[in-house]
Length: 452
Image 1 (cartoon, rainbow, N blue to C red):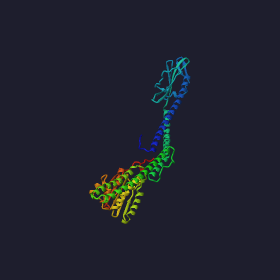
Image 2 (cartoon, one colour):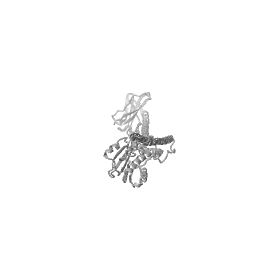
Image 3 (cartoon, helix red, strand yellow):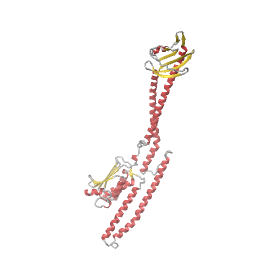
Image 4 (tube, one colour):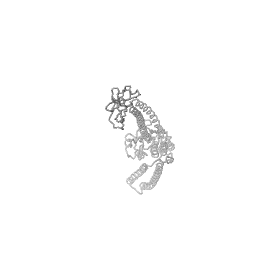
């Protein structure tokens, strides 16, 4: 497909514009040609009348043929633009207007007529009518010509004015056409707005109040939303049931391993507890990965709406510590990603920061390119020698207790699922840990959709 990045509106407008220009160009060419042909036919009819007049004036006397009673002075004035040449009995009769120039007189049969375009005495364009007759038993060939320069000048004037009028009409039609296309695309723009509202969680399905050509697509999208929503719900229910089913056996395993009566050897007890704890951590991580891999549509994450709500929850959770949360939202907020994914990511980072902060937590969001989230605190931070371990892919950070580790493995999974970057550093203004998450713009986000 040519120019796949162009919007449907631009494609339709360009196609219609090219068609309109071709139509106007063809009309201009046809009309100009028709006017030229009509004008030449009119000149040819005058030449035919002049030919008949010359034939009527042709007489033969003792000293040869001659033309009598030619009252029109245009044939007497040199280079007047009107010329004739008559040949009969081997003699030529030429108009004085030719002066010393020649007028072509090709061979034609009696009753035959030819129309020629030739250069005149002063290289002006001539329309020449050649005909052959028989009068009083004698063969007569006659060429009558007229200068087309005045006619062509009038035609050029007409073409110029007609071209200007056509251009004005064409521009008006182009503007009208763009308006009609924009009006026709309005239902699609409304549909695009509905899709954005759907992604933001403001509605559950697309409205069927659309043109008939789009209604089957809307129906299929709504059906797909229902199917995927059902699959997502069943998947999450199954994961919840799995987690609940595994909880009891793992608890029993821990109880048995921690009971000296069951496992009296402390070393053996530790060898059992470590794999069991590893299994519990892996189950939790894989359950999170499975939820991320579901790929079902969800509500969009709006930082200015969701992060303050998370902060309020954390303030209540840590009410005894009187933490000071500061939030700096994006300059231009746009829906981004899946709401549950980003809530879990942001919630884990905020909870982690709140756990280790002494008194202050600062959150900043920037959406200039994708989503950049920074969470800082004034806690003990992470030693420089541990920073490399924190950023190493696949590190089991949720088991670390010396620093910021709780929930960070889940954060890593979400960041990896979005193809983003996770960076740990030191907060210069607060002195604690600074966690920066950078997520690229996701395909299909509303702000990536071309305008219709």
